[in-house]
Length: 337
Image (cartoon, rainbow, N blue to C red; front, side, top):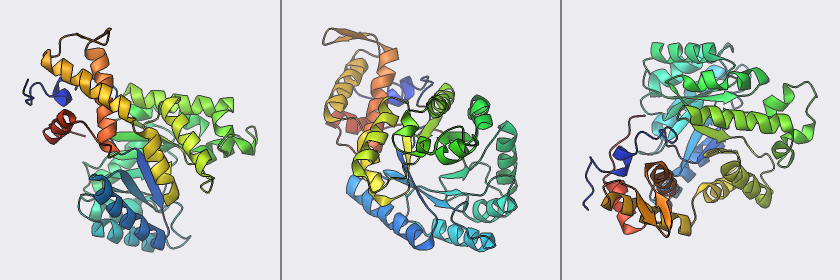
């Protein structure tokens, strides 16, 4: 059956609550000028390699700006964003809403480069009121269409995660592991920030699950925290796999270039998953989205959504797709994010 806009998976399965926002699975952070420039160059190189922009670069003001040099750093970040290669996804993390530099960050960066940015990351969001304040600042800067990504970094923020995720401008929720552990006044040991402890301590595990659940409840993207042991490749791969397969995260932070490929690999479906998903979606289209039997198992729209999302992740991570799936993405209706 010929695929048209009316029967295209992206149209028919639009009612899927989960996955209504699709972002690259890796969000790479850098705040020092030389590293920001290298990150943007690497992003462009890997886009040519994979045939798609497979990771975001988020330029960092919060930890990147020297004390007293916030205005100059915001201007630098703005120029770097404006100079990024066409088609590359570039975001910026500004200072928290209660920081003296917040208003200036937004006015400079969103005011000048808002149309070029993919998102604005706001750290240390505690409540819906903080989101509203950030939206007001963006609107005042003339960037009323720029999506917000927010960092959940405290017990109070975890408690308010569902309210935060419900806001229409919020596109993604990230877990801020280091600040979350520190906010417990020593009640969580330091190894709760490590690659093993962050998957074992009950309070950290609970926070991760709550954030992922809140994001999925409103069709937003949950983004997993950093792994600081960037020189330990196996630890990085393990953390990325667990975040993707056990904790419901569909995106993860990178703080070193060596972490990008392990994240892409962990969050990408394997060849067998891709092949199966393409066969099931193809059968669904041929049946005009009625239920079908595939290898002795009944499938309908509830499972079609899952298999379509497998293909979306494969496409977003630059994986090879069967010919029919390539055609679906070539003709896909553009989503409204």
